[in-house]
Length: 123
Image (cartoon, rainbow, N blue to C red; front, side, top):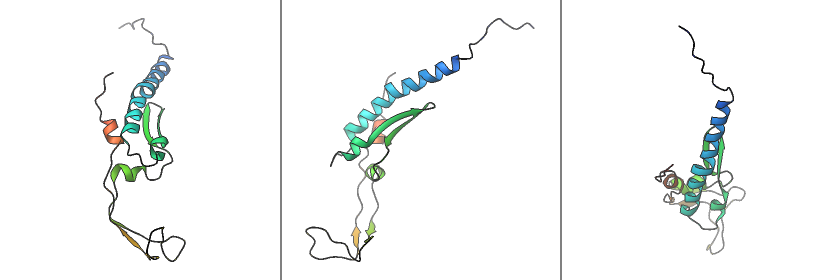
């Protein structure tokens, strides 16, 4: 059986990959990032300002790169004990006296990334 004369340009894959990366970044990534920034609980604005969208090898990542409590805001925290790190006791302005530990009740989740991700979008 004879081969057909159809030849595929070897650079086509690179062009398609670049088009996918561009679409993920400029269309989908920007939309998810914008929604997350609008939905995030704003106390100081640090978490909102730390949110980024990046695309690498057809993988889109949206989230905070440097805000260590981002997951705690999204998922909430369970009750936990707070102990001093560098001192023998904890103290804060307004406290009656120093204490050895604090029983924190935990925090309720305030999702912002999952609702942004699950928004219905059109291409």
